[in-house]
Image (cartoon, rainbow, N blue to C red):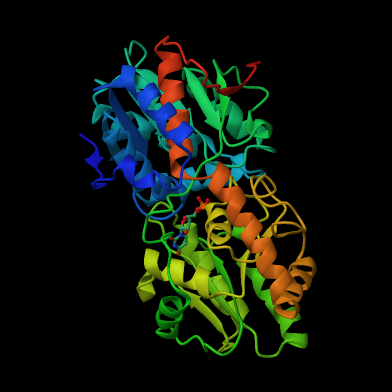
Length: 425
Ligand code: UDP
């Protein structure tokens, strides 16, 4: 069988002070008819990126409310993950498509993974494109197959989408962050919309005092008396780390004491990451005030938390972005947050009220200057941003959405609970 991920335990009761009483009882009600149902999550990696981040919280919470749930990782090598990275980029709008050989590689690895998988579940949740074609091998499955798309599909490369379409059309439901991502030329059986969420109780998002955060970032050589701007992201062209460096250099002209941290983990399904890491290092040209850090420097969840808490401003200058959990995380820490007007980011930041939306390094630099020049006004935006996250983007809400969908697919009555669906083509 495919490798299991150990996610540990979580208790929904611990979230009682963070979620409304109505939401907590809605979750209990929706979980009632699903007791003991077997659920599996399939994804490409247990480390790095948004899917892993979500599953470490969602999977144990599903277990806590009574589901028999597992998370399994598909297998692949550099050749396969090179192809899936091309697919990922193409679905986010990159014109480069797949060769016949690459298409065959994708299908071969999906078939191989399917051979190592037994579909003896009530619900099979497939995350993102990497395992999306495994469903082809189970035409008579009794399970409800659900595709959860985490990427920005608003301007997909149509040839790659057409290649994937026959697989996507087999799923009983496909879930997207936003209505704009529902592909128009794919005959999905059902498209459902909900945004992802962060877990406020993980080491990455738990309350950390300013002193503790300073202590942690100090270990990495950050000068505590000088302002710090931080972007936390994989090293990926869509996250635009080079543009962040350009913005920092513009800020430097008026604020010579500013420092920049670019913190990004290396996911094993992301061979391109190394190339982009090296390009980022080259672009920084040895500037001692640019700190390029990753899990290779022992950056883990607590360190990410500390960098976010300690920073004068959190940046996420994405050009394409599925949702942008790092934005949610920055806002949750009530940080002044500057982010690209891309993908799911405008759904999280109200420009001018809870943060800054930017379209270029120049606008990014202007926003950072505003933060450094008016810390009181910036802090007020950060506080409002945190309230938005509390209302809309915390893990109990995401759990509720999943339970609602499981019930709907089983034909159970949803009661007062609504799911946002988009008409299929
Ligand atoms: N992340 C991390 N360490 C890093 C870089 C990213 O833990 O060095 C986490 C980050 O905190 C966030 C997730 O990975 O929780 C990235 O999710 P996001 O939606 O921002 O982007 P994705 O990588 O899924 O495109």
